Image 1: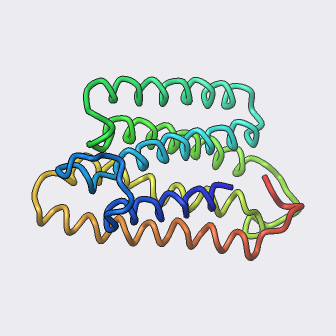
Image 2 (image 1 turned 90 degrees about the horizontal axis):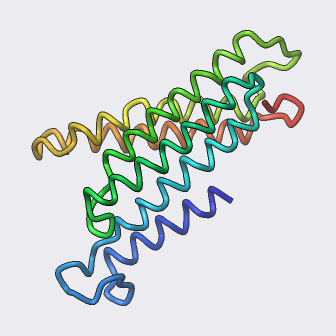
Length: 186
């Protein structure tokens, strides 16, 4: 479902930006603004993975931290929406908070995997590949949000890195889907 949602979000974002028939706003100054769909997408993306890891993690304390991290993430999005207009601006502060929470959750997952004994190789575990992909992308995503607005040169440099890391993240997802075995999932 998440892959389909991602695809349609990207498709809608493209049409809003490059096709005059798809508009959120009738005012010509804002006709190309599609950032609201990405703000909503990012919140749903975080909450989806928080839920997945809350069900995957074994330690009760880790699951509790994930639950409170989800509440904190939603609170960050609500507060950031009061500071910045989510219809026209990226909710950068909320994205940073959500990313840091996800990184913490991924560290919990990796710690549990390290101490867990399994008869299956991690290379056959879809969740492990998804975690590697998420960690690779979300470990640099907050830096992009924080430093990406400094200058055009920095934006250009970070954009290339960001696009590369998106490729790495989805590449890990694809590898996990191709080599993963159902018995090794966790």
